[in-house]
Amino acid sequence: MTPARPGPSPAVTATAAATTAVTVVGIGADGWAGLPDASRAALGAAEVLIGGPRQLDLLPPDCAGLRVPWPSPLRPAVPGLLAAHAGRRIAVLASGDPMFHGIGRALAEELGPARLYVLPHPSSVSLAAARLGWPLEDAEVVTLVGRPTARLAAALHTGRRLLVLGADAAAPAEIAALLRDRGFGPSPMRVLEQLGGARERTTAQRTADDWPAGGPLGDPLNIVAVECRRAPDALRLGAGPGLPDEAYEHDGQLTKRHVRAATLGALAPAPGELLWDVGGGSGSIAIEWMRTHPSCRAVTVEKEPARAARIARNADRLGVPGLRVVTGAAPAALAELPSPDAVFVGGGLTAPGLLDACWEALRAGGRLVANTVTLESEALLAEAHRRHGGELVRLAVAHAVPVGAFTGWRQAMPVTQWAVHKTLDTSAGEDR
Image (tube, rainbow, N blue to C red; front, side, top):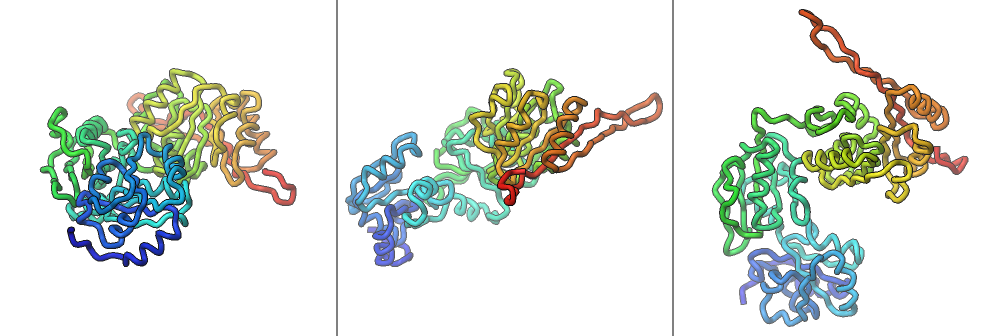
């Protein structure tokens, strides 16, 4: 049998495993040969071994536990599978580091961290950085496993290095196609396959423009390394709010760039928060909210089906395909939505009960921002400001335009904006 690498004592592992429900063992493409003593001991002692068929095939006959392959889809099967083998020593196999885009997250959420004992293996991302000589803290990791390729678009900025976890053998060609479509065809790419295993391979570097669209498929276990370079004629999209208006497909219903930047500033997105974008128009506020951090979430509500479809196309193109688009009229369409951390109302303010419904749904500590250009809606915002406080401001933007042989200012319609934080008034026991 192949000598094991040093690691935690098998005795320590056995003691820890005895006090937990599930031991999670990371394994690499090098299989059993790459495992330390502690991981081998945990697998050898397990009565039930759960993992993907490829991972289970890496174990020697000495691991005599019942081998149970994960069904597909995996995540819904986790509770039932664990319950079916409750009371037995269970070891779950995971690729690389179980807590880095791995099964460890699902198990921790299902069982609680205290009932897991995790024995990680170096992740494929760590191995890729080592092979490339890239400082890992300077590279952005994007996973496409179980996710649409379009989400990669939000990470495209000139000079950035990306390590993209491919979903299958077709991933490199799909990534190259997206780079070309989004104006990053000059970006150099390399594919690293079977990292750490006997069949490890790194392809020659070539640009996305030169990547063969119908070339031979490589190994399904791959990471694509991308050095982002924007084509000279491609539209530049920054990381902050206020993308160029030209970045959006729209029919005129678009919060313009400068007002959009001020609006996102007032909404103050933070990682993990949920936004309601009511009266979505072209979806620009929700899209730029989600672009601020990969964990930001948003729901946009738009009553016009054609605009709702346009919002989905804009979200896909700008790298946030996870934006949820609800087609319906507010406030009725808000009834079943999860409670938001922030609300933006960009249209439909005069709909009876809309502002009150948004205010009631908003979590304590949340923010509400509403914009309008009409006197009727402005009166509603003035009344809301009187009741709930906050800030009432007028945003005026003018653009320099030709006036005959000279240059003058053209004033856009001023926007009235109400921005307010919902705080809990403990003395009254009410939100205000």
